[in-house]
Image (cartoon, rainbow, N blue to C red; front, side, top):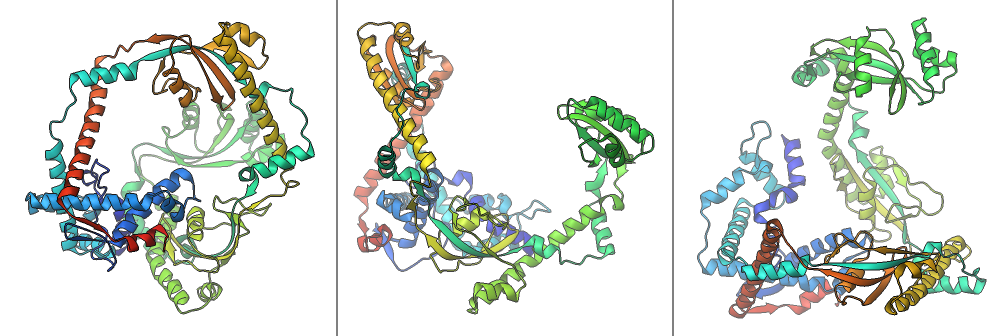
Length: 632
């Protein structure tokens, strides 16, 4: 039971923010149900309601994590603050407070029965055995996350009230038919252009780079040739697999577990075990020789050795006819135990199979699944004791000893890494040592200062704990030219080809403006090819490899006019030849109407939020917010 509660508590943040409580309007974001109370520092006061600085910090950190997934692991809180994300977080929590006040003033108070029913219906609070709400589990999950029942229920009531307010405000909002038709005409208009595409890779008349040119290019583009930040780490990890090896399980316990899991091992069709070899597609004759050798009394291993086949025997554990490759199923189940099949061809090559065991319908015997049951029991018991051992490691670290001393006290290995980048790339030829959740370890390391030791962290898979110390931080540095000369040469040559493609594109554009035909222009340039686009949509969704910015330019010019732009492969020049008016069908009009309705509802909510700002006084604590902005 405790293990089940721990499993739920660890992932509750994702599960507890139920989908219907996450409001559709970014004007106020998700609710504050993560903690009660908070620090004494106040970020703002809205209509007499104090907003803790901690709430703004939490929203800000969530935004940082979202952008880090897009911009990469080097995007940190300092960069986010420079982009103004702190102010965005303030706007979000202030807007949320405005809606809370408005809902309260309007007397929007959801019935307690509705809130209670919502809580009871959530799987995170249910007993997995019965599928029913379990109050012990409910209270344990809340306690594990620092929540009281009253605070949690109050947060849900506020969410429901805000939902009701937004629903009443936006009910019945639909765009006029004229607006939908106008949007359809704009969005579904299509344009056709004649093109001349220039492939920079086909331009080969570029000069050899001089040492001076390479040196200048190397210095002018440090972002291309700079080594990332490296960190040398010491990691101590405690895994369930480590503990499983030490778990003692007696035979009777295994049989009891087998009986408890009997339904899992029940099957309604015959099962078989096989030994097989797989030979290349051109080795049919060799496969036949192997099969004949087995029929002559040799084992598969002996048969392979006798015919000189370079292959290994691959055991195939208990399997049904339906679970096998279609080509193998029939011949594999047609022979008797101990017999060998004729060679069978599949997409992987030629197979020869020997039936080693068979079981008819019923329940797999204990002996057939003993190893599987033992492995599962060991792992389950290891997981049950993992938390206890983690506490011992945490206590050893808290006692003031070094990381190595703490590891030694529990007999845990100490893992030392070579200089490693945030991406997991190591410097030089050194290999990254094995460790649990390496990406999570690196993420933690990049949140830990040089010489510091992280807190003890549970892995996302909940089957290990780790602690990491950052021994040394190697700052990013421009690699010497001699070290990256080959890369610099390739980049310099590509830059020359790109510049040549751009110059050719300018010349092509002038000739097209003068009335030349694309085919004639392309014929004069070995690296060019003439073409004609499909009717392109304004959003570029059917533009294939044409850049979106280039498609946008086509919708800004008149027929006969010319535009040009860069592509990943070189450059493209286009002359607009035809504008195809929109002819949307009913499905398109319906989709555009729905999209417009969503936009109108968002505008309405934003206008209402603006009116609330005039109604309720807002005071920002700038000194406190400057702490988040990194200005103090």
